Image (cartoon, rainbow, N blue to C red; front, side, top):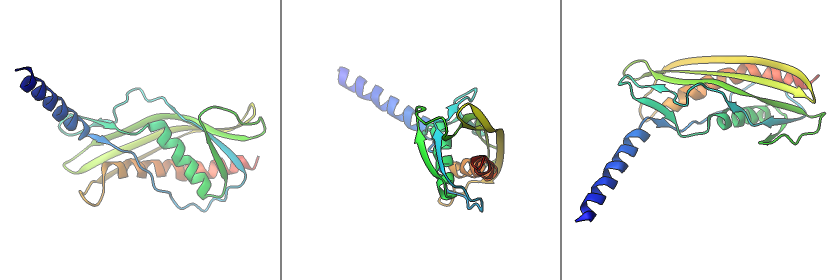
Length: 184
């Protein structure tokens, strides 16, 4: 007698989890092409997630949109890949173990939002503070923000593509500044 009740309860939980996961997206990133040359060793230190809320935003049905990915790692690894693509020799660290004379890039994710604005349109916004240091000296510190609104076409594009494009907007501005700071 308990078995059908338990099975029904498990099925209800699984369906609820499946529905909740329907608005959860996996963050991805594709490199931009930059003309900025970057040389030398750089340590990318794990970014901090300083967003006031963990949800990304809402659908037009007022359902929460969430991320399946670690937002801070997504930004840090995107920065790592961009620096490597520009010619630097980056290392990724989750704990500071760099010598005092090594260039360290870190920062905070201040905002990452994704909201459905129409039947198939979404608006994504990324705001990141990036800090470049060598020892106790801050060589560069700036807040970068990028916003993209676009259509999601099933089979062609995803909600994650909009956030990736917004993050590329941040990287387009940040990589030249970091490369310039690396020369100091």
